[in-house]
Amino acid sequence: MSMTQLHGDTGWVCIAGVNDSNGLYYRVKNGFCTVFGDGGSVWNGNPKANAEVLLATLPAEARPSLGPSINVLCGRNKGVALDSILKVYSDGRVTLYTSVTNTSGYWNGSITYPVL
Image (cartoon, rainbow, N blue to C red; front, side, top):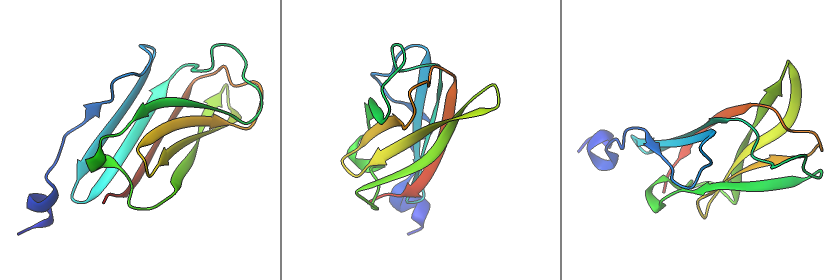
């Protein structure tokens, strides 16, 4: 049995519970999951430093086998890094984290990891 048969391909799935101005998608294929996020501000104004907002929760089949979390730096605003980090936790939470106070700009990021 091939890996494709074992794990299949979910195709791109939009995760529910994300604000209309933001898109968050996942795809499980061949034992790996890719999470892609794209959107405007999720902060409802300027956050405090070290703020983290929950975007959605992944279903069990899309959760990482690595943990407790994996993340990727994302987010730009007119060429200036915003220090936003897209995080995926082993319990399925997908969050956007910032270490700075002014993160009102556009963000996007993707991450691929092995699934359980």
